[in-house]
Length: 511
Image (cartoon, rainbow, N blue to C red):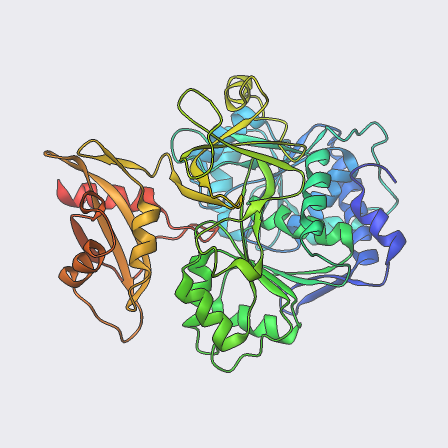
């Protein structure tokens, strides 16, 4: 067994332990570590027969399912690079990504076969279809895997710094960058994660997309290394999630605030028993205090909050449950092996309660951006700190707070306005279910704020009432110029609000 052969190592320790449940399948798949390792060896042998070897990229374009992990573990055995694609992307965007990552093989699900057919006309590919009839000359996944040998596959020359996976950044402007996730990075992220209370017997339900760092690396890989059980679903469905949390006695659950909001409005929220949960983790945005209080009061949930990113960790900060109310809005303190600092405009270190850019250093940083030396060099300063692009500060006790993303900040009348601060105030209103604040062009002020609000069921308020509510809690220049009520906000596959789409929508509407 070598670096990267995660399942062979785990099979040695706990071959018959339940490793994975794929609740998106009908009937569900329930795999032990022995089952999982056998499948990974089979797929690795087949990939090898098609010419895949150390350093080659193998891509997957599919909704969540265990096949993502089949591929990740098979690639790890070969030393190949798992390359999961965002299925929201247009095939032309994917073609651009293919042209700089050069995958040799693509595995895809039937939802995306039209785009794959277009891709195959413009890029030479070996294709494998998970379901349906596939495209011209594509291989059927399950029969192909089962026909292969399950003899052990390893890559003796694999080193800790070799790349295990490419995870694409958000790509809000231009072409998404591919962060190189090394085996070293995975090991240090696991160490940071288990220090924060992961045990050998945890059951984790994953609701993040598998092309996202949250899906593959927040808890899924640490769970495998530590020997726990991981549950997968095809797509986020609040009722299904609540049922699985109860039925499988899930002990760890992680989601973003929008998902936690959606769970509370599911028809089975009142009846579901969540007593097996040791804690829930929230990330991606500050968790509103009323929501923490609702979960605590109605379900007895202990919340951890955290902060991570594609290029680092992904586990960077953690806020303990006992601090959830006392330090509301904080992302917590740095994980054990993470050095976090705040720097000013001249890259000088700032002290407590001074807002600046969050920078990070540590062994859980990625190896850079694939085939992009310029971006790799630009991301890290001369002291070795990675610049996150987040505006943050820490208090006198060392608890960090994200003030906002630099890209979300807008300037109104010469003043920097941070939407996260306004959203925090809006969430204090009893009728607000979800909200997002964006900056829009304005002839007088340069930019002004617009609050996009989704109300709770059977609750009502008016634009005037919300503007007055914010005026009572915020400086005048921070109060949005307008409020628009919406039935829903655009949500990414990772559960985050797509502010770029909101801005585009309202800019078009104003023209």
